[in-house]
Image 1: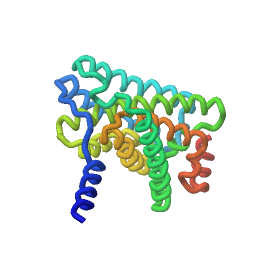
Image 2 (image 1 turned 30 degrees about the horizontal axis):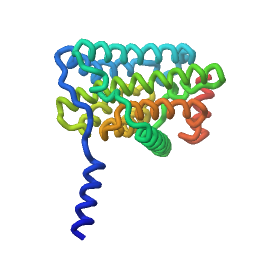
Image 3 (image 1 turned 45 degrees about the horizontal axis):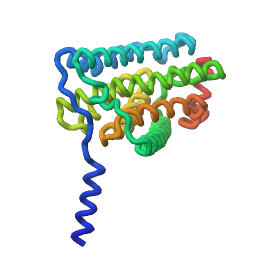
Length: 256
């Protein structure tokens, strides 16, 4: 019995270990951490809301999203270069193939399941999705290809910026990756404020799921792949399963 007990403790220790990358930034890195924590999320709240005004064309929104996330990723890389910190030190290192596939699959399934539960739960509680959330979903083949480009860009850039750069900086300050992930994903949730209250809750919790490969030592690539794959699957039509049909039909009829 004692041996079995020790084995359980060892297994539990492996599951809750903290292998989150941690860096100590100088002033350029600290300033950018503040921008990611406060400035960028607040700016995202200024995007079109649920008023009666017409929403911008989807293709224009896709281009804007791609440019925006790549600017953030480029600035993150520039700050790392200025601080003489290799990208691998914030989690951008390649895991073994088996670990990559396992973590990508687990994060994808966990994120999709969480998306479904949160979206359905919010709908049941009367928490509405924003019009923009539905409006962003592609309606035809041309828009789907553009949306796939958005999905890949968001998958890489948001993970590198928020679950790489920001998470590593916060872990270096807080000395705890699990806690740092909570703080980083509070900002990540507000970053998705254009999706309404349900969207912010969903982004916060699903962002934490995507952090797990980073915290447990597999790095950013499984999170990047899972994030991109989830977005692609939603763009292929899976988003219609996330909320009751009458809800998304009502909103899409008012936006198209």
